[in-house]
Length: 145
Length: 395
Image (cartoon, rainbow over all chains, first blue to last red; front, side, top):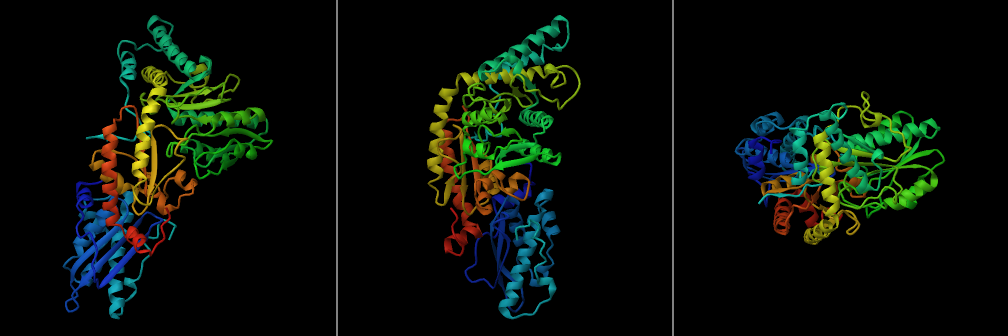
């Protein structure tokens, strides 16, 4: 299908890191079933190095929602939490060789899902954080949230 | 195996339609408005096509106007009836919430021009009633527009009954028959239809060819001004090849209608039985009062676009009413009008069959869809919550 790049279709057809973690250190869920997309990201974190040792995702959504989840999890795997927080939706879009304009929303959701998972990790461990970890509300573009 | 199951979107051009078109793209190139022999040859073919449509609709040739397609026909029908109403000070229109956008958006434009519009609610079976129409009529109602069969869920509306209500009340009645023409019997006289739209590419004719029936005495208002083509109601040199293709396709479809409907209904009902056996999957619209080739289900816990992409990979061309496939943020207005919640409407699948679909293709669909659904559910956080009881099942 010409709607999506080959990269997007590859990550849609063969999503990386799909699944769940039985004992995650952090879980982030963003989106709304009413809007048609929900992403949930599970993190396993090494408490000493703060490195993300494993990451999994579950996504309800369109082809690009699944592909951006796959790519975002690939991009934060093996990175430290602070490096993961630097992941921008733009970087995800670029890594996928672009997304149609009306699908950029999906990449924003992926960025927010990573942030939500890191925030959950901090909450569980009682680690203080600033505004940068709070929901920026960027996924709230559909009016249903 | 490639299975084309999106015939409500468009159909393959039939051999008969193509054969009728080819001469008009070759040796028959005259302009039907010209006085000379090549022009008059083209004019004869044009009138032959008009006569064919009239015959199969129970109309007279002078009541048939060729257009560019269903959307143009709908626009012109509504605008013409509105203009006739306005002349008598009648500015109220009755229609339904699940019309095609060619009707709904024209009505929105008319609202901005001072008309008031009542959109009838859609009952859960997807069939509006003549009583609903009767109850919505006002002294100032100038037009009722109800589609013959819905394009997404395929439900067939009681057109003859609605026509009778309108005729009795002296209100013009338009029906968008784009999905029905060539698939269901239509008789404009018996059904009291004043205006009817159809589109050739939904019954194996070419794209870019449509027709508007306007009962004699219902003056059409042009959308396109210019020459005197189509009795001065639709200017522009006629697309003779497309019109001939449309007429040939329509004749073929009308002649084989009963036989095709029986074969398609059997395939449709097998699909409905097989797909609704998937847990938490429901049929949209009445199981019987629906187009012979239409299947539309909502499947809980998954989203329609990813389903379509995976089916496409398996060689199956289908469609969905999810927001991601509608190009807007909301899922199908038809499914919402039917009362499906947003989260359920996102997981819809429409399969629409034609005479070219084979029983083994239905087998392929029935093997593939449950497999794809269970994969997508396995990676869906919504399905996970439904299964854990953290979210209530809606269907």
